[in-house]
Amino acid sequence: MNARSPLASVAQSAVLLLFFGMIVFPIVWMVLTAFKLPRDVHSLNLNFSPTVQNFGIVFEAPWNIGLRIVNSVVVAFFTLAIGIPAAIMSAYSFSRFEFAFKRGLFFLMLATQFIPAVVIILPFYLMFRDLGLLDSRTGLVIVNLAIVTPFAVWMLKGSFDAVPVECDEAALIDGASRLAIIWRVVVPMALPGVIVASVFCFILTWNEFIFALILTRDKAVTLQVGLVSFRTERGDLWELMAAAGVFITVPAFIAAVAVQKHFETGLTGGAVK
Amino acid sequence: MHDRLTRYLLLVPALVIVLGTTLWPLVSAITTSFRNWRLKRSPVPQGWVGFDNYAFGFEEPEFWNALKVTVVFVTLDVLIAVAVSLGLALLLRRAGALQSLTRAVLILPFAMSPALIGVSFRFMFNGEYGVLAKSIGWLIPPLADVIWLASPGYAMAALILSDVWHWFPYLTLIFLGGLAAVPVETEEAALIDGATPWQTVLLVVLPQIRGVIAVALILKTIFALKMFDSVQTLTGAGPGITTQTLAHYVYTIGFVHYDMGHASALAVVLTALLVGIGMFYTRLVMPPKAVAR
Image: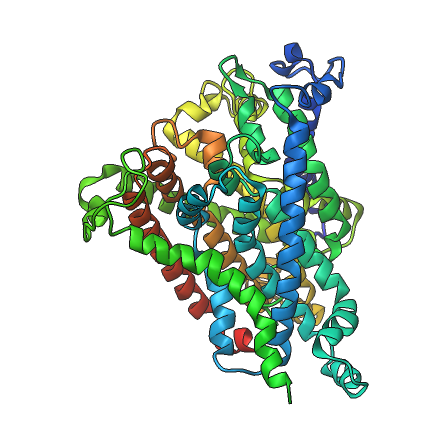
């Protein structure tokens, strides 16, 4: 750190540049691959003639990535539409009220994150088999709520804590109900926190893999699991995987970059005071 | 006041979701773990078999292999990811063009899906044309002939590398957040008192972000213990089963062999392990009041 001599300063810049390269290289390489013809994929030569045909091929049979995109979008949308409001209400309660077993309950929310996805999926697989929910988007939304909701409660409580209780009290005197206070006072004031939590949960759901791998076969296959299908008897179709990868990555990147400056407090926000 | 009731009603939706989607499956897995249930033979659970499904500890080398793989993976992965990100965060504290540029891309790997990262790294570690395998071979000639994903130790290294790549930039963001709260005066005072820059960082700066380091350690450990996605898409647990983590082993027993009783027993053990480590860690580093507030 404290670079006083020019040499140290150069060394520091070199290290930073190396880190920068390490972070962006795999992403750049994937994007480049997505623009390659099959014959260029196995070469490291950067001087290839780019093509956009891969982005078209993945929409054709048997890849049908359009359907996968719809599935991923629908599952992410409904997971958030159910999970975030539920989390907002309980985070508010945790933030504002005292009640029996409060600490225990809050800790329980967190502790559920210690349960691995593969444990959650075993009983759900068996239940969905009986209910006919295998290979359905409904089934995916249900299991995705398991990963999203506890995180959202944890993150939202932190941002609600930062809203002064006086705001609630003023609204109470004006005759507002608690629900009205949550939606019209606290959520707007803690909006950056709510957006960060939503974006974080979106990324978790969008990138979810093991649930979709086990629960879907055909109709409800998401983008993530669709990746696996590019492994064929003819070998790995890297250029198509990369094109699908671009579709996976762009929405998550846009969401993440939009809230980047708030992101560092995200996961730890509720914990470190 | 009616708030008495409201406070509980507000909790209901999230509690129902959390209990229904995490605790119910856990209880159900515990029940199934005491039954004989091979899906290929029967669509409904068969007889109760006591602790038979838990006998894997004695007769299954694959279980011990998965446990060993998990311990090796978690230890190296967590240590490397946390050390690298701490170092980078310290470098990024100063203002500068290169610093801003690097800070701007820190969020990207974390937003990428683990499954896709696995696929990308499998491509880049390909023995014939993988750009990472080739670059490493060029930088370190003795490694030029290594077929990464076909050699046990190297496949593990590739797995760790891919996961470190996924996590270290995000951990750096967390550490930057912590470092921002460290008053500059403490550092200046130490330097004036004659401490070297290294001493200042180790003895003055880092102790002040203890809490943040602890949270990062817990977070990374829990996620590393659950490692599945990129095991599946990068190494496929191979070569052989040399990179098969516990989570992947449960998956194999459950959804390749369809032995639900056995898979449930393994799942219960994995959960106990995670909860145990999680509680131990949390107790160790997080004062109870931080959670209670």
